[in-house]
Length: 273
Length: 273
Image 1 (cartoon, rainbow over the protein chains, first blue to last red):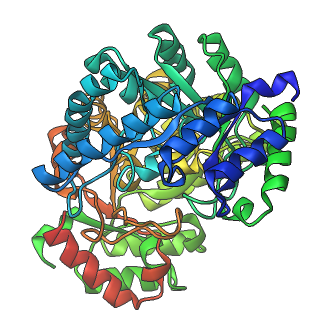
Image 2 (image 1 turned 180 degrees about the horizontal axis):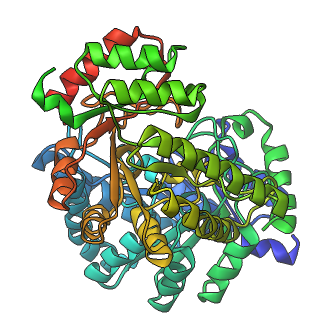
Image 3 (image 1 turned 180 degrees about the vertical axis):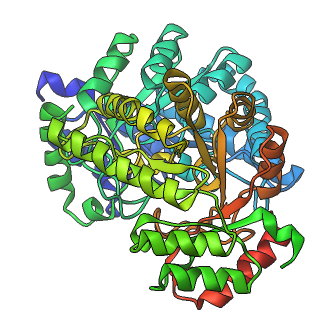
């Protein structure tokens, strides 16, 4: 592998073409990539996945995902905590840098966004002692405001960091350029996140113009309008020097061969990030 | 007309089924609606439109739109100022409460979002004396972050109000529920806007789940997840008691007869807002 690729991680959502976890890892290794981020649904055999990680000396830059705390009733909220504990266990077994949280949106039928946000804070407070015990940092990923209703009601870095402040140790943020690039307070809040030791992950892709599907039309780095180099400089100035993790949900890229996707990720990581 | 409908305005984007301005006004009047907001492209004959407004005693809750200040070069930025002056003239002729500004996004080929934002501030500062002279308030409409690249790089109420503070008198905000409902600082910034006398318009529609097209899949009030009644209470608590202006960009509603759209607007205004 090329030394510079130590700064590149591949989130398996970028190459979810129906492969097994082992096949995904092999594809990454072939391109000199030794850091990955799994999604839970691709880790169907946890001991086997942990063995693959260990034997190949892989870095796991995050395990996706916990979260989805809000629910219509107490039973639903309890079930979410239990599910999150299992996700913490998996992240621990894989040696992941953090468990990424997509915190969840409005419960079905609800229009109470402040209420949903309170459920997230309450759910995280309840999960946190378990995660601390397991030494698995919880990474709040603020999602783009487009997802406030159905995926995550935490939508800005500032909001995430305020929640971190309220929760204390063991929590931080996963900063994804797609979700945060538009934020007028971006630089100030990245600096704050660094100062408070909260940056746990740095996800990259690009924002296409036009974006034809808000979920599955994310761009390859360099194909959109995000100033990725400036973004990286801010993150580094804030003291985070971990890998940049490529997470591209895209119907277009999903239709391409995995090798082509990975070759392009490596090339763009070197030229556009 | 029913007295309560004085609080309802129809933005013509909601009924842009290929009608003339006069026909749109007639359709509104038939439903007891006496407040409207035109888009410039539907005001093809300004004196005639002004006559229609005057003779029917219509309230014009805003003229859409000025803005689009960023451009790739100085000539482009100058042309934008000239175009905005014409929009101010039209708003004045129509007796509009304000000229709504969709401020513009990144110039073609640019990834410099802070630079685009500076162009907006500079363009507004240059336009403002002309607008003040004409007694036409300029209403910054912060657009949803989804539009940061291609329509408006001003994306939150806070950012808009900070810009208002820098510019001084004669500017304010158009608060559209679709663009702002997700904002964690919504209530605080609405209260601030009221305190500073900056609320110039209140636009309503709804956020559908799922939203299949970020531009043209806005919902009829009550069909989505925005707590419109809570939103209205905040706006009123902040001291704004002007009309709620229905602005629904929707391929679905555009395919329906204008009478059905307006009947539904009236019904939902009474039950869901």
